[in-house]
Amino acid sequence: MNIKKNSANIVSIVRIFIAFVAVGLLFIHTNCAYIWSVVLTSIAFSMDAVDGYLARKFGQASQLGAVLDIMGDRIIEAIYWIVFAVVGWLPIIFPLICVTRAYITDNIRSVALTKGMTPFGMQSTEWGKFICASKFMKTTYAVAKVAAFILLIFSYIPDLDRNIADPTRHAAVILAWIAIIFCVVRGIPVIAECGKLFKD
Image (cartoon, rainbow, N blue to C red; front, side, top):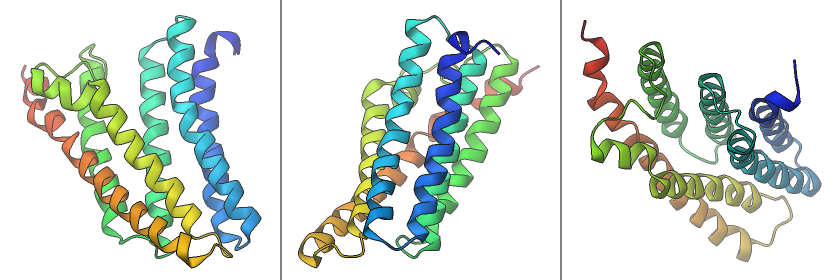
């Protein structure tokens, strides 16, 4: 494989492994492990912007790249929601919603790919394009999600002062609810506009 020509795709895959290491550290109950988890979580999510930048800069945009990008997003998002529920930091409803929404939208988008559409290019209405593909919606969702994950991990650093931990934890939970609501809302246009994909 030509590394230079596939740098964006490599970044998309590597960040998945970084996220797995980050959540694995949450089961080592030391300050150092949790701090490293915060750092690696920040890196894993920042790499999402890097793969897009590389794809645009070096002309590596492709259907495979789009699929890998979305796949990476889904895997990383799911493992954080699942682990947070397993350790009791968030209710189980969070990963259930996340995984259900991912299965529905990504299966619909896989049909769109067979019709020659990009995952986000299947939206034909203005409201659908805005909710699914606009920079505002993508950025707001990403910021809420990443901030929730980072703050939640930070708030559970074993020796963190409670005067810092408690308000940080409350803020993280609020952001988590905002993120999961965005997760659902951004899936609505995909479902609403999927009928055209199944017409002969």
